[in-house]
Amino acid sequence: SQTIHQWPATLVQPVGSPLSLECTVEGTSNPNLYWYRQAAGRGLQLLFYSVGIGQISSEVPQNLSASRPQDRQFILSSKKLLLSDSGFYLCAWSVGAIETQYFGPGTRLLVL
Amino acid sequence: QKEVEQDPGPLSVPEGAIVSLNCTYSNSAFQYFMWYRQYSRKGPELLMYTYSSGNKEDGRFTAQVDKSSKYISLFIRDSQPSDSATYLCAMVENNLFFGTGTRLTVIP
View 1 (tube, one colour):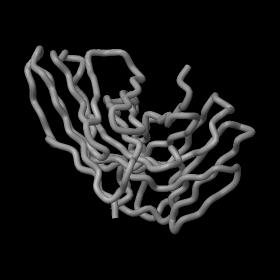
View 2 (view 1 turned 45 degrees about the vertical axis):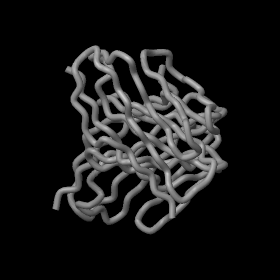
View 3 (view 1 turned 135 degrees about the horizontal axis):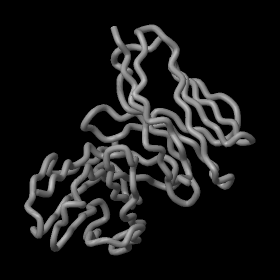
């Protein structure tokens, strides 16, 4: 069966510091991978998605970036965090049909 | 105007009640409709998805889609305290568009 991992679970970072969040999927090959941010009362916002190694599409221009160095690994990064980057970051995967996306446990980021 | 509108609640019901959760949407191009359940501090889990107008049943859960009215619903029968969570509707047109979620509490 497929599983998706995210770490860390919780992160507290100062403004201006770098960020690296990692997501890995097991039990499937060539998944589509997604990064979402969930802010209170604002639902899920798609940040990036990837259909293959090195292929990244950005949905929202901001100070975040994403990379996919391996088939089942997706990384979310920032060089300098802003207060507004605080939120709950979710990684998701799908295979084939986009409608069935499966989410990881999430990373709660607090920027102080 | 948001593409997907969902009443944020919160909604509190007694155990055993029938719960109705609803979303409206404006984009007639949406083809697939989903409901996710999200427990506090966890990732959303897919509950149900459907393509066509009509009803789809899975145990105590029924998903209903009315494309003519651009309206979808999730019904929970015999609600249990373990159903207490935030319920997110989602719709597909190239990407997934989510509602903001409705927080449900089922009181024992």
